[in-house]
Length: 374
Image (cartoon, rainbow, N blue to C red; front, side, top):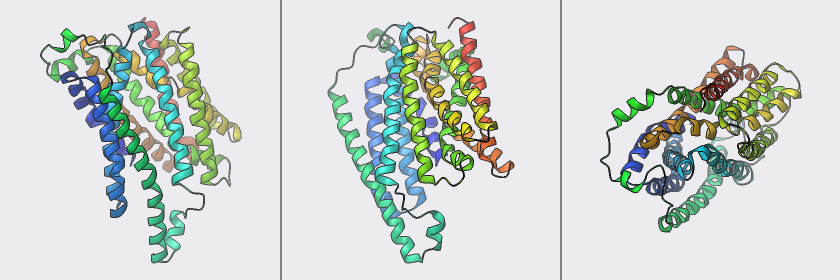
């Protein structure tokens, strides 16, 4: 499921950048919202078909819409003002992203997943007819929230149609009239820049670490705190997301006082130290350390994004799209963690070595940018 989701990001990011160059950021944002809404509405027929592939297709369409939104909205916010404060603007806008993540978990807990829902093992033990009824009931719980989200997105897209976007300093009107350059020379210029190359790898590893940490938080808690139910362990994940939102706010405030690259390096280094405790502690201290990692992750994505695209001029749209493509790391690092866990008898705690090493590199990139005066 994660692979389909992140592949959507990977393959759509460059087409989104091409559309931005050809038309506008506004067009890309509206298309992203419409694709996201379409993916939500497709859950209705998927619930009737009741196949895994149908639900994967819905998530794939949603991922395509999100890729348009990430490529356009993040890059656009970085260009709406002085270049010196571009990273701070992206961090500020990402505060609302973290609030959305928290809302998603709450919707899942309150409207989709119930504590009394039968587990996979319980479904297998049921008579076929009873299991079929239970599956239809659980799928029915999913459709309602997606219909609501899809409807809100349609309204939001219509609002954007009638909103006049401020002029973008990174793409003045006269520049938009120039012939669109082919992608090859643009990519060649971008990958000739060390800060860009190193930053893409940093973002790849960071997203992988973030997805890995959150994907396996519940299993980690159940391993360290024996006897914890999956439903109860979900509250630890929710705590992580709340702390993540707090970290976003704190990091945005700190950017008035600290170099963004220094902030990235420092927070990533702190995440490394906390993951060391999480991996090698055998008590609840490991759980507390893992939850605090989310605070340290807060500024990493937007700050890394801002550092990579900073000063890219006419190549900014393409640079932003390639950063979005690096989200594919979210499909790779959790897979690596699963392999490490399997190699160690299902021990998920030791698997967190993988995100630990990812944060070592992210810290290196942050401090490298400081040394280079970025």
